[in-house]
Amino acid sequence: MTRKNTTWKAGAKPFLLKPAGKDYLWGGNRLNDDFSKNIDLSPLAETWECSTHPDGPSLVGSGEYEGWLLSDVLKLHPEYLGIHCKEEPQPGQLPILIKFIDAKQDLSVQVHPDDDYAFRVEAGQRGKTEMWYVLDAAEDGKLVYGLCHDVDPEELRQSLYRGTVEKYLQKVPIHKDDIFFIQPGTVHAVGAGALIAEIQENSNLTYRMYDYNRVDKHGRKRELHLDKAMDVVNTRRSTEPRQPLRVLKYRPGWASEFLCRCKYFQVERMLLNTERCRSLADFRTDSQSYQVLLCISGCGLILGEDGETLPFFRGDCIFVPADSAEIRIHGSAQLLKVTG
Image (cartoon, rainbow, N blue to C red; front, side):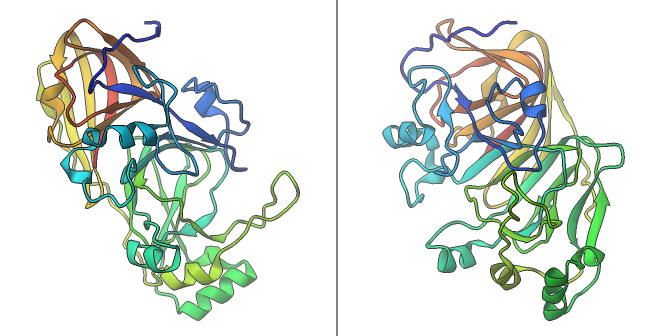
């Protein structure tokens, strides 16, 4: 299947998104090599696939508004968000942000604030609750998830100064298709060799606690945020995360499974394998909310009412407006379906 420029007519139709890229020092090249992102950064650590955040905004990649900022389209068409986003304080802002992460090296040990702290201390910003879906992992891959036992806050602070904090970190193995829900205050870090899809609040607040004394390409150590991190960190022992029971629901041509639900987003995995078109409306749990489809493997085709076509491939991200006309989907692919 080859991509060609789509010819969707004006109106609420699904459209591709074009991500912003990040060249953090721990990144690799898989997002270009495996997902054909064609972003001129090396390393390419993250792609912000669906983002209205000013630190990495997505562009519209197809249709009537191709080349526009997603945030500008949503300002022009707030109805695309649906009723669940009517309380958004800033026009054109989504409550979520979706990324791909390629961790060639370990990420820094970090923690995120909750909404209350972020609002008070960070000029009204959002906190950061997030979910990871593991697309691939090294054979012996691990990640940091919380602390292995209760730690006195001052003892933890001193260990950060001394560089001995790793003895307190709970490291857990990860495998392809694992999911992890990271609440604010939880110490965490993605380990080397992991390829991850991240769904999170629309926030870029990360308090870096420990970075293995690494230096960037200019020979400088990256900034740590110890005071703020200690304000928000949970110093109690974290229960080792267990993978939830996941049940596939089969329908002709496709299946789905529920992955995660919190106050900010809901995530399902869709497995499409059909020789005939199925109505995307069958996939939709709420016609009054936008949906984001992130293709994590395979490829397919979305067809509109009047024969318009929108091909998608592994790594593509598709925004489906809340008031989208009925569309059909066809192909062999796995997608994460995110609703706000």
